[in-house]
Image 1: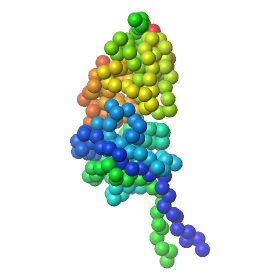
Image 2 (image 1 turned 90 degrees about the vertical axis):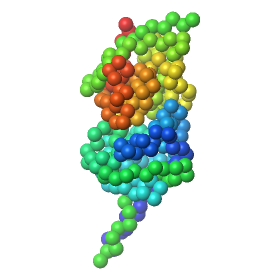
Image 3 (image 1 turned 135 degrees about the horizontal axis):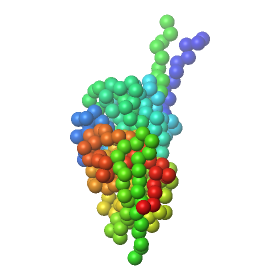
Image 4 (image 1 turned 180 degrees about the horizontal axis):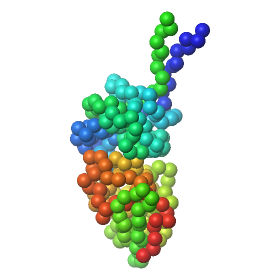
Length: 135
Length: 123
């Protein structure tokens, strides 16, 4: 009776409200920047703005970040990521494959094309998942 | 007429860039705290010593062309480059060095990092 399925837990859930003009160019650098929609408008050009509905906890390595229908395993998380995300809705996502964050604000995933989001898309961070069916 | 004074901001331990001399003017009176959780003590100290007007960038208005300085708590990618790109003097609480797609805009004349309140001195 120890085949308890670890339920997926949503740590953070948000809806994209706007996408800045420089975001697509940054995707070419493997970089996607988020800010809460109440952030200074001076930061909107370089970022995806969003409105969170769940903001319980920042990510840890091994969690999954889901952008629209694009799920990615988180490899590394810098030391200021949690404060940035919970206070400001801010997150720097880097598809650089690093397992130690280069900068304290980095969230690192495997090298891959990051999606160009649009208003209405979801942005989620989840922990755990359905476990393998016990044999 | 407000009589503004200057402060010198030097990099802290492990920091980069500067020193910067910050002097608010009639045209650029604002000391903007673009940080989480209200006005950062570094921004408050710069404002107190210079006579600039401190604003919380996340709850108030802080247009680029009104800023004497932007105080940020950036982990190294976004805010760290945006304000220097607009030629706004930028003080980072964290000890970051230029990085990211905006790194080209981050110069020693515009940017100083690793700054604590005691790194802000009257001139």
